[in-house]
Amino acid sequence: MLREGGLGDVNSIVRRLPCSRDDVLMKPFILIILIGAFAVVAFDTVGSLASRNFGFGYQWLIIGSFLIYAGVGFAASKYNSLMFAPLAGGITSLVDSTLGWYVSWIIGPGRPAMEMDSTAIVSTVVFVTLTGVIVGFIGGLIGRAI
Image 1 (spheres, one colour):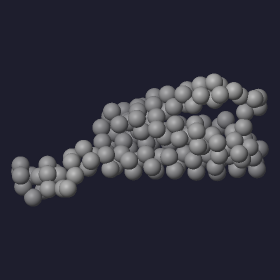
Image 2 (cartoon, helix red, strand yellow; image 1 turned 45 degrees about the vertical axis):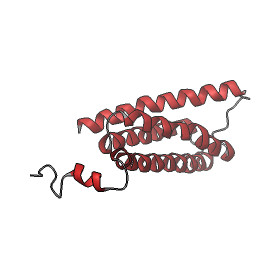
Image 3 (tube, one colour; image 1 turned 90 degrees about the vertical axis):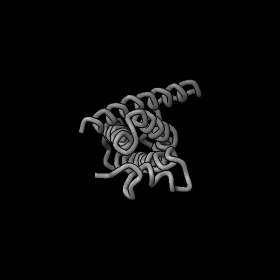
Image 4 (cartoon, one colour; image 1 turned 135 degrees about the horizontal axis):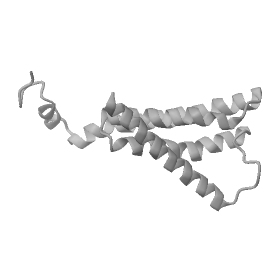
C-alpha cells in the first residue's frame, strides 16, 4: 500500500518534477493524438491506393476511420479521463477530413464526383469532425467500462 508522501506516491513524484501535474497528464494525450493522426493519414493513403488498384468502393474505408476515432477515444479515456475522449476523436477526425482527404483526393478515390465549392468542403470537414467527436466519446465510454 502506498502511503501519502512515500517514495511511490504519485503526487509526491509529480511535485518533484520540473513541470506541473497537468503537463504530466497531457503528455500521453499528445502522444495519443500524434499516433491517431499518423494512423488515420496512413490508413487513408494505403486505403486510397488499395481502392484505386483493386477497384473496391472507397466509402467502405469509413469503418476503419471510425475504428481509429474510437481507438483514440478509448486510449484517451484510459490514460487521462473521459473528457479527453471526444477531444481526441475530434482532433483525429479533423486531421482525417483535411490532410487525409487531401491525400486520398490526390491519389484519386477521395476526389468527389462533382465539383465542390468551399462551403461544401467546410461543411464536410465539420460533419466528419463532429462524427469523430461522437465516435471518440463512444470509444471513451468503452474504455471506462473495461
